[in-house]
Image 1 (cartoon, rainbow, N blue to C red):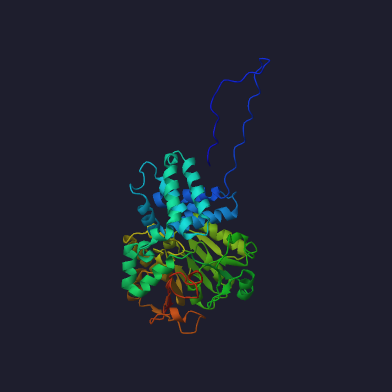
Image 2: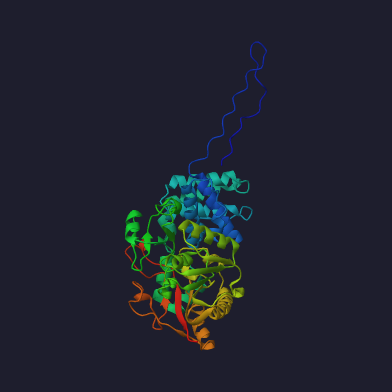
Length: 463
């Protein structure tokens, strides 16, 4: 917020009678410019992500709940878009900052990134994007001396958008080299490029409904996807949408809704959902009539799981603890959605491109192997084990299963059959496993297309 100016100090004036004149009335502090609160949140959040390695969702948890939902939603959209297009934005700003960013004002980068995001990738008037960014620079002691620089940079960007973007390939700029190389090796150059391209587009909102997806698609101006999820392109604040407070649906990417369906009919079965929070798969299983035990080690995420179940009016046994120390069972079915690099969700969680490193793949694959072996011990003979990850890396999916089967002759694949689950035939591999790519499901414009990258396999315990 821009501080109010003070009049210059001067001796008090005297009236003709010699009495001091009435002091001038103090002007009230001007109200914050409309939209400034959202920009403050966005810049604060960007600093947490870029300078402190926080995830976007973690940064958003610090948003003031008293603020208008639309301000919080706008702030998150600015943050997410800035992180999603970070490579492009830094190249553009680099063309405008001949001497680079001042080291004495690290917050200035977040201010410029937020402003440039609005100018290049959002439907925000240029004058608002520039003016509010300059206000932010003036209001902070560390950046006040560079407010003129911020003004000049963003005004020039507003004038020369297309020229400054010329020659920048977002597929190359906005995806780390190591990820692009991995995806080319795993899926080919064309598929890798398509994945990078769709990751640059803001994702739609997918929800899973308890019943009657057609009715909810109409009520929410969405569409029913082939698998039964409902997709909404322009949702606004989620909590304000019809049916949310009433517990009629929950947010869940269309791909994330598939692994639990590999278990088939679960009504009356004893099912363990391991690494369960925040609870989308637990909700699916409970809504289908399973007796669910949901296990997760994160206290905060367990809290969210319980809140979600309460809102949805669904019940499950919730266990807070390390999955590797969980000894209940045996279960008719076990679903393990294992911790992973989550590279298949980069479109929805673009901070992954910043927070993940190549070495994370091997480290997480080792953990997944231990979790999978432990999950196998919880399955009764004749029971089913579904293993899934939201990673595009074969070491965390296909290769993980091959290692498991080589070490566990008492398990075998139970391959998915064509037509078994509506809408997934394009995602069934020759081994009968599930592999979705973010570039799948081209449904017209990019904003309506795609889904998270997931791997899932169904295994049967033989004895």
